[in-house]
Structure formats: C-alpha cells, structure tokens
Amino acid sequence: MSNVAARFGIKADAQNVDRKIFRVVKNECECATSSHLQCTSAPAYLRTNTAQISVLCYAEYGAVVIRTILRQVTAVLMLGLLCSTAASSQGQDPIPMTQNSPARATDTPIPNSNIAEELYQRGHDALNSGDNALAIKAFTLSCDAGNFKSCHNVALLHEARLAGDPKLENSNFKIAISYFNRSCAGGFQRACVAAAHYYRSSKYGMKNAARATALLTTACDAGEIAGCEDLAEILYLGDGVAMDLAHAATLFKKGCDADGRAMSCFNYGLMRSKGQGVAIDKDLAFEYYSLGCRKGSNEACINLAVDYNEHGIVPDDKKIARGLLQQSCTKGAMTACANLGQLIRDGKPTEAENVEAAELFRKACDSGFGKACRSLGNMAQDGIKAAGTMRQAIKYYIKGCNLNYADSCYNVGLVYWSGYRVVKQPRTSLFWHGKGCNLGSASSCVGAALAALSLKKGDPLGGKDIARRWFDQAKTIDPENSLVKSMGDWLDKP
Image 1: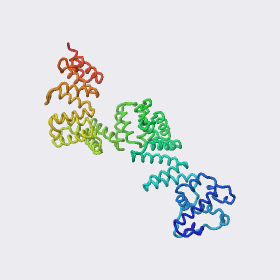
Image 2: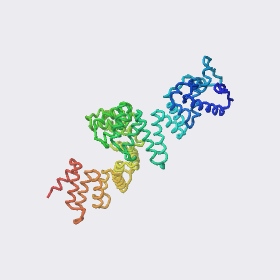
Image 3: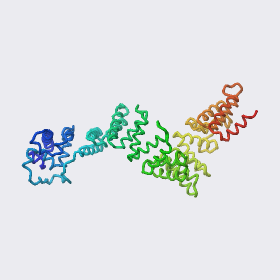
Image 4: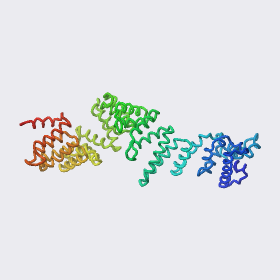
C-alpha cells in the first residue's frame, strides 16, 4: 500500500485510490480557496493562486494531473490535503517511502509558473502518443496559464488538422492565426514569423504586407533568424513594400552566417554574382554558393558547378562540376540534369556519353524543363540516334515552346520557315516565331519579321509594315542581338 493510501486508510486498489484521493483533493482545493481559518495550513502556493487551483482541480482530466503532481511533491501536497491534521503532524519525521514507491529527486512544491510547463510537457507526451486532440487540450490549458510556446503549438496543430483534411473549413486557419498572434504578443518570436506567413499571402483573405513586415522586423531584431530570412525575401521581391536590395542582401548574409537556411546562402551568392544591392564579387559569390551547397541547396550546387566548369583552373575542376550536377540531378533538380547533359555535349562525347546526355535531357524535358526539350531536339536534328529522328526533334521543339522556353519557339519556327526536312510553311513559322517573340526572344522576333515578309501579297499577317513591327519589338528586347543588326540593315534597303 502506498504512503498516501496509508494516510487516508484506503485499500491498495489503483482505481479506488485515484477516485478517493481525487475527492479529498477536490474538497481541500475548495477549502484552500475559501476564507475558512481551519484551512490556513494548506500550502501557500495553493492558497494564493486560485487560477492555478482551477487548472489543477477542475480540468477535464484533473484526476490524472493531480495524481502526477501528487507523485512529484508528495510530502508538501499532503500537508495541503490534510490541513485538518497538519498541526498534529508537525515535528514528526517524514513518512518513509515503501519499497514499491519510486524514488524522487526532490519533494519541493511546484512553483506557480510550472503548472503551465507541466501541461506543456503533457501536450508533447500526448503528441508523441499520437493523440493530437488530447495534445490540443493540454497545450490550450498551458497557453491559458501563460506558456506562449503552447499557444504556438495549438496553432501548429490546427494547421496540421486542416492540411490533413482539405474538407475542414478555413475557420481552422483563423484559429491558427489567433493563437500565433497570441504567442507572438507573449514574446515567442517564432510565432511572429508564422503569423507573418498569413499576412504575406492572399490565400487566406488577410493579406497585409505592412503587418507582415512589422512582425518579421520585430522577430529579426529579437534574434529569430527565420524572421530575418523571410523579411529579406519581402524586401528582395518588393512584395507589397518598397524594394530594398541592399537590406535584403544584408539579411540573406545574416541568415546564412547564422546557420540559417541554405537558400539564404544561395540568394546572397546570387546577389553578389549579379551585383544586386551590393558590389559584384564573384569570389564571394563562389564562397556562398559553396556554403549553400554544403547545407543542401540544389540551386547553390548548380551555380557552384557552373563556376567550376566555366572558371576552373585545373582539369579536376570539371570533374567537381560534373559530380555536383550529378548529385543535384539525382535529388530531382531538373536544371542540374539539363546542365549535366550539356556539359557532356560540350566535350567530345562518345556514343555512350551521347546516350547518357539524351537520357538526361529527356528526363528533364519530361519533367517540364523546356530548355532540356530544346537540347534534345538539337541532338535529334544533328542526327544523333539516341535522341530520335527529325520528326521527333520538331516535337521536342514544340514541347519546349509550349513550356514557355522562348528559344525553343525560335527553333520550331525556323524549321518551318526554312523547310528543313519538312514542307515550308511561312504562316506556321510566323505563329511559332511570334510566340517566342512574345516570350522575350529577340531572335524569334526577327524570325517573325522574316516570316511576315515571306507571306503572299495581300495576306493580312504579312507585308513590310507588319515585319517592321516585329523588328521594332526585337530591338526593344535586345538591340545588340546579331540577327537584329543584320535584319535592320536589310529592312533599311530601298
């Protein structure tokens, strides 16, 4: 029989002990909150904190919570429970533990602030057991008791419920944002970052760029690196606020240096490479690409590989480039697959290597990477059997164009304008060249001008005036394009 059961004269039946002890505790809790003089021997922390007593005594699963606290603070809690006999027990030796009672590290009463922490830990235990509903209840009680990490967890669990069941109403998002805001107001900065996500997006009907920026600025200033990184994205894109590339670069660097996201390293390297908000520094860009790659950013690995391939000093640099691209391609980065195929093609590929390159281009093309479709079409047009026939080359060009890769539109337009291994079709050529031009290809604009000039007299899509319009668009896109310069000389002839 346990010591507690012995003091109450209760038989050592587990359910009976729990039930009877809870009744006594409930009565004593009610006593402790009253002004009765005979209850003044109850522990001070019970007498002075009615909110705590409410949590302890009247929670839905109060019996379990009380049992847990009793086991941890047996000696002190017994004084509160036995307030009517506390005076007579003064001066006696502590009741010894029985052999079956687990040893405790301390019998110090739990401070007021620890009730919220106990519930927080209980929420995690429920979460680990797979009972999310019970976890929400525990975290909610903990949040109400002042633990703002628990408020954050309540919000996360409501997000998880909605993500797991698309049929749930958006009210779950409203609950989530309310708890994120509550946690944020309590000083838990990670919740401020989470709340800002809702205010950045138009999906939830609460977009407020100024609010998102303020939350992220506060979080960043408080040392929450994720807040700095999200703020950098907003400032880089000018998402609802004034674009500030210099500040964005500073924050991306801060995130990378503080062991934040790999993409922060990549973004800072990219800005250094392009001179966006900072001076161009290729060496520093290389350094941050390397950091980002080591942290797991495929984008950083791809750019690092390009640098090794284009600016390598020793032959082994190209091997490093190839290895980096191979790893990123294996992880599913289609840009890496396409670049690896091109790296192979730029060398002196053997027949086996051409097969490998074609497979890489096909993989990327099938995954929606338009540039790879064009590369595969080029291989087929060059007569490499591993890539396919000329008829298949046209299909690859068309697919690349439909995936909005402008240069692929130029290729299919050129095939139909020149009649290379197909029937010459100026109108079809104009269609594909026009699409490429509208996607930003100056070469396609020139192609469209040539196709317009090739149409029969009287065709509403043809003639020199129409050709001139296409040509003017080409000059706007890229006045230094070699085709643009040649076309200009030709059109200016009388």
